[in-house]
Image 1: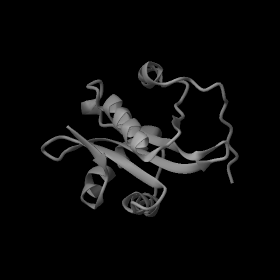
Image 2: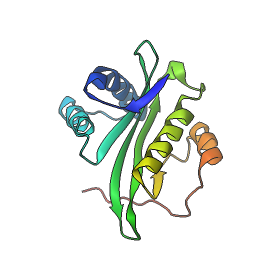
Image 3: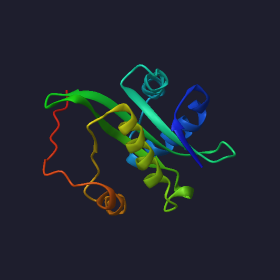
Image 4: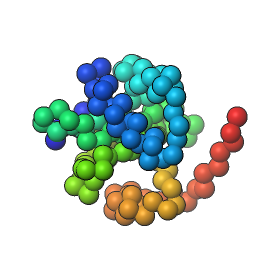
Length: 146
């Protein structure tokens, strides 16, 4: 398995996984919105990026979409892990943990202060992994839809 920053050659693999992820989340994503997200990922100078995990055969196993942004309490950047998804057939094989480790390594190389993310309270399988590698934040997340 290789885990790398997603590039133009990864579009089809990422899109296939993205469509499965959206279906799993019950999100009806338009073709235009999905394409816009991919174009953001494809621009290396932008704040939105993705890691992609692929087999040596080139088959995409999972992705981690992330957004890097400034932080008011530090001169270092933060990384928000927006989406982490592993194909059903590759789950419970360490792919998610390996992607998180690669993201952390990349963040260290880039000088980020922290990586943070949200998960659904009912996602106990993911929480079992997250509890092993990270600290649960004391903060509650609120959102205001616009």
